[in-house]
Image (cartoon, rainbow, N blue to C red; front, side, top):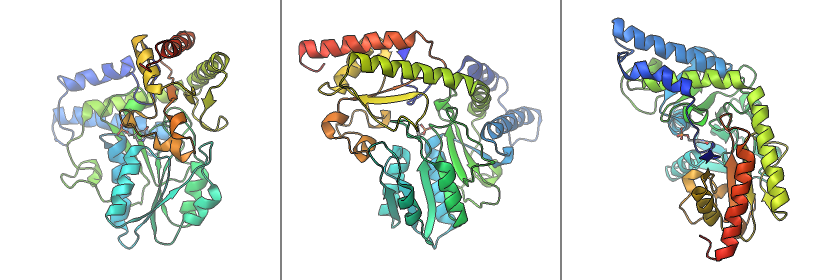
Length: 381
Ligand SMILES: *Cc1c(COP(=O)(O)O)cnc(C)c1O
């Protein structure tokens, strides 16, 4: 299999599984227990906290473990609203992951006012419009650092600084950015930041929320006093240990491995251009993740191409995984002004450090074959 769907999820690094195994077996203690078994689990938890902190340029005690990106985002946004009951305005973008998009739509139904900042045809956010959207009653700004469908990066550092100057809480959804661009929370003044292990070669169902010290953030669920009262429930110790190792490995692989990944992605794009002169690439090429490409092959049905590529052993995606299966065009491409027909002919390929260089030519050959078959049978499947 040639796996080019790394923005949906990544293969765990073998060292991640190795670190988790003892904790799934004989090292089964509860980290809250004051005995030997508990202390072993507590040790694993605190080691992972230090690893994730180092990965983000943050103090270990600012790291709260969660069940993944979605929970971190919900905790950040609902927590900021709960902590400031007099403020009911939220600022976000039109190109958020569905985790944020559906949460903010729900909060609008619950009486919040949401400002959805538009983007241009390259997926770029209008910074002047952003500054205008910030108000005294803004409870939180929540912005995706890197969009999962196109890889386009938002100017998080400048946006966070502008929010901080106005004493507005800023949350960055760094689920897709982590491990692919530098994240240094000593210099980027976000208050809250979400990451998820399975997007950088860790296990699924575990992530972290960075909470800057001094920010009082009520927990999403009420229960025990785990995670310093910031996230109730017995911790997923094996998953958290896997997250810690994945964070350390991602930090060590950067920037050399990301330069190699960018080389593969760029070679793939050149190959697509050579084979399909009418291909239309989505997203500002000057400001995006090193691993992602998203393009339309006009007149060809992306679902048919995906199915053809799947039969040839190549995994990619149409739009984002969370919206596959829906007939609607992706809300991200629509926000960039891409028409429904072009959106329905758009594919996303996302590379990672675990892809060997040979994958580029093999995927290009498969894409050419899948497109030829699509044309040949005329049925789209
Ligand atoms: C995958 C993803 C999420 C959701 O993370 P989960 O851990 O799968 O809940 C949120 N935001 C972005 C940008 C993502 O790519």
